Length: 127
Image (cartoon, rainbow, N blue to C red; front, side, top):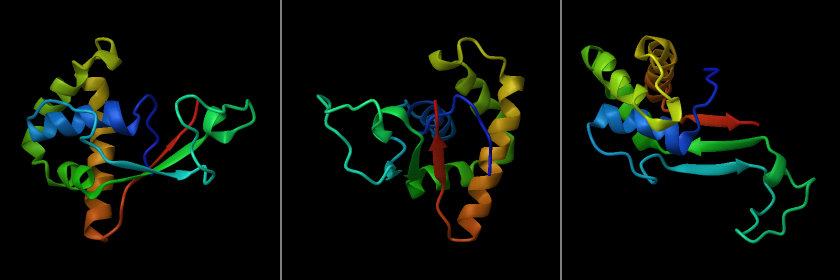
């Protein structure tokens, strides 16, 4: 398990994956399939009930193998440069790459363990 605040699967984690793969970030780079809540997800126009778990969270997602594999396969000597690029993401607001090395390293280590065990990655998100 990695506890990492502000790292949602599609955008922020996707930007790390993009940096590792040396390609531009795109919205579909990290596949994420919602697994919680189990109720059908409302459409963009709702209905949104204030007690609906889709409106309040928490949410859980199963991540696609391509993201896991990109994280697992990154060479150790490439990690600092990928994290430097990741730190430039707008969502980090000018973060120092040295502050992002530990969570990136934990995510990479988790991906390596998951891949070696034939397991998938999951992301739990809360407000």
